[in-house]
Image (tube, rainbow, N blue to C red; front, side, top):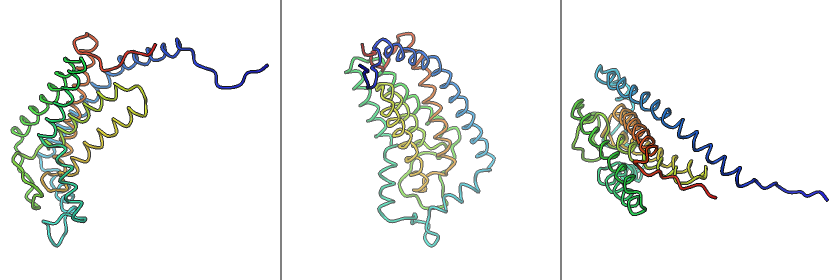
Length: 252
């Protein structure tokens, strides 16, 4: 008698496939991380050079003015609720939010028995904040004065600290969480949420008139480059056993 139905995969084959994919990721991951660091780092310095030459001024002004009511530059385009929503979104990149989120994730990792991974997260985000501060002091670009600001600002303009720290925190944490779950749909969702949060924070800064578009683009570049560098370092430390790997052990 012929038996119909979907054949079951042998557990040994499934386990071997999972191990092979993980080994391939460990080989390709560091190379991909270095390529991202190099490309994004070059993009940041190239953009910084163009900003210093004044080449981006025309496009910066055009984009900033396109987001304002021509009859009243203090009024951003769109309904009132959109402006309030943008203020809420920009808060996702504030110092308090980033610090709170980082400490919460680090505490979770430490309580889960991954103390060194928790300290690594703190070091990655804290180091990024230090880099952001140094870059702002070095370039010292004035904030936009073309339109009234939609909120108070206290630091220099280039690069955007909110855009940079959002890229560092949300991309780093999204990558970490994506490695914990082996389901591709979950990985894609977590990474998409990290990228979306990063993009929305940067867009909100331009909408509120507190940053030139080139500031935000530079913040994204250097923030993503730093997150890629942290990814590379994490892979090397995990390979040496100095930082706990977030991946769960393969199912038997």
